[in-house]
Image (cartoon, rainbow, N blue to C red; front, side, top):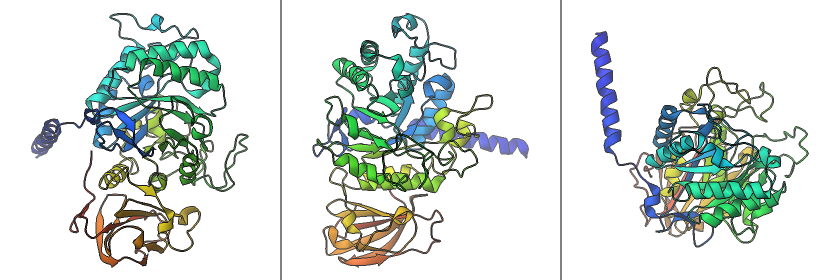
Length: 477
C-alpha cells in the first residue's frame, strides 16, 4: 500500500510539472518596455497594455540564495502571481554572497570583481536576473542601500551608475531603484549622480527612489528628470506608535493610513504614478524592534494593499519578514524572524496578493481614479475607513472592518448596476443582484474587525467585465 501511495504521489507530481512546463510563461516585456501612461497615473507597456506591479521585497536575494534556491524561489513567485522582485544589489562595503564572492570595496572599482571566465558576485546577479526573466519577472534593483551613502561620493556614484547601466541596459526585466530606506535630503547630490549616470547609458528602463519609512520620494525628487514614478514606504508602525523617531513626518495616529501617501504624492507637480514600495510586512512585529509585540497578519497586509491601490496607486509591493531576509536555520535573523523563508511562502497573506492584481486587470485600467465621493455621508476613520476607486462604468469599494456603508451607485454610468462581493482571501465572488443607480446601503454577515474584509464591485449592467455566474475573479497575467 505504501509503495502504491508513493507511486501515485510521483505520478501526480509529474502531471503537475508537465502541465506547468506545457503552459507558456508570460513575458510582459513582449508588449514593449515599461513607460508612463499618457494620463501620468499608471505604468503601461509601449503597446498600451496595462502593467499591474505586484512586487515582493526580496532584499537579500543576491546575497543569500544559491543558484538552485534562486530558481526555486523565482518559480514559486511566478506561480503566486508576483511580477517584480525588489532586491538590494549592495547592502554593505564590502558585500558578499552565499558563495563568498565579493562584490565591491571602498574604491568602487568594479573591474577588480568581474574577471573574464570567473563566476563571481556579478555573474551570480546576472544569473538571478536571467532566471527572473525566464519566469516573466522584473528585478527592481536597489543599487545600494541608503545606510551606505556615507561611503559614496559623487565621483564614486557616477562610476557605479555607469557600471550598472552598461551591465544591465539590454536586459528586458530591469527597474531601477535609487536610495534605499533613507530620507531624500541625505546627500541628494550623490543620489542624483548615481541616477544620472545610469540614465546616461540606459534609457530603456523606468526609475524611482525608495525612501525612509513614513515618507514619499515625491517630497524630494518629484521634479527630477530621471524620476519616472514615485515610491513611498508606509512602514511598519501601528497607530500611535512613535518610538521617539526624530524624523517623524506625519500627523499623530495616522501611521497605518498608507492611502494618505498616495494623496500627498498626487499633490505634487508634475503628476507621476505612485506605489507603496514597503508597507508593513507579514509576520513582522508591529514597530519592528519589540519582538514581543503583536505581528502583522494576512488581513493587515491585505488592508495596506487595497487601501493604497484603491486610493490610486498603480500597483503594490508585499513583504514578509522571513522572505525579505531569506532566513534559514543557522542564519542570524533580524526583527524576530523565525520561519525558514521557504515555509514563509506558504503563509496566507503571501498567497492572497494575486487576487488584487486579477481584480484590477479585470477592468479598464488607466481610466481608473480614486474617488472617495462614492462613499455617501461621513466616511470612517482608522480601520473603519472605506476606500473607493472607479472607472467610467465600474467601481470598487474596499471595506476592512465590516461596518455598514452607503455607496452612491450613480457615480458611474448606467441606470442599473450589477453588484458583487469579492472575498480578498480567495477571490471568490458572490453576486448580489441588479441595483438602481442611487445611494444604497451595503453590509455583509461577518464579525466586526475579524479579518473579514470584502470588496464591493458595482458595474454598469450594460457591461460584462464579470459574468453574473462567475464564482471567482478571472485570472490575469
